[in-house]
Amino acid sequence: MTEQLALPDLEAFWVTRGALARHVLAVPELGCVYVKNPKAGCSTMTLWLDRAYTGDHDFLPERVHKDNRLPKPRDIGWRKVVRMLDGAAYRFSFVRDPLARARSTWYAKFVLQKREWGPRLQPVLGLEVDPDTPLTFEQFVSALELQDPLSEMDPHWRPQHLNLMHGAVTYDHIGRLERFDADFALIREQAGLPDVPVFIPNSRKSGQPDPYDGRPDLVRRVEAIYARDLELYGY
Image (cartoon, rainbow, N blue to C red; front, side, top):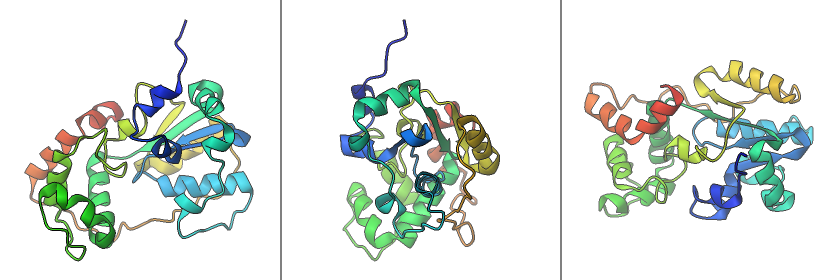
């Protein structure tokens, strides 16, 4: 007999239950559970689920992760959420090429939003906290190498298999951001989800520098950090 999933199995991947709750979007009315994986279409999917759930296709908040109207696990009840993740609902998520995800995280958080995010990693490197100084990509990689993936890394840059609670949750489909349209069409068909238009709120492809250019050593270091993701998701 297959052992049933239990809440402690999920909590083992998160420092607090609050962090777990923020990353599990269970929608009983749609019969699905989306597990958030930051920097892999997370904002897009959260906004889409909100629009599908509410029927408000024009909803476009500034902070979709905080201001969405989706049900919270505490309102649904954790027992039901766990059952949904254990097979009582359609379970899906998205992953992304780990090298591209690391580059995107660094650029978004430590260049464009350096004042908010820089002070979070500067102390890890023994640097004086200075919100006006962006981290270089190499400094970002060095900080990641010093952090414990499970307990210290922020979900935006920790390995994706931890965000997806690999080994505890079995998915009906894990899409790739690189083929988002095709994978999401498949997910919608398999799960019987409504035909709601997709809007991509955080698209910053243009103007991003390539920090790997001429630096195979940085490629190797990032690959080492995300070795398990590369293995599991076939990148």
